[in-house]
Image (cartoon, rainbow, N blue to C red; front, side):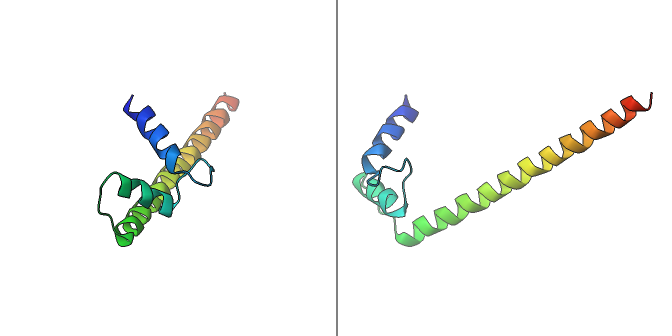
Length: 81
């Protein structure tokens, strides 16, 4: 229920209707909620999100490569029997 609320609420501020909030739209939403967030706070949040996204991408890539390597190793072992 909370997720649905935030999804609907954020749609109100998606002025270009691209399905995502840019920094200005995000700041406008936070301002309407009564928060006092500076541009620097938002920039730091964006950097944090980008770092986390990079970490998740790296982790996903590692597991993908590991599973490919592992499946090839199993296939090679199966063919040698």
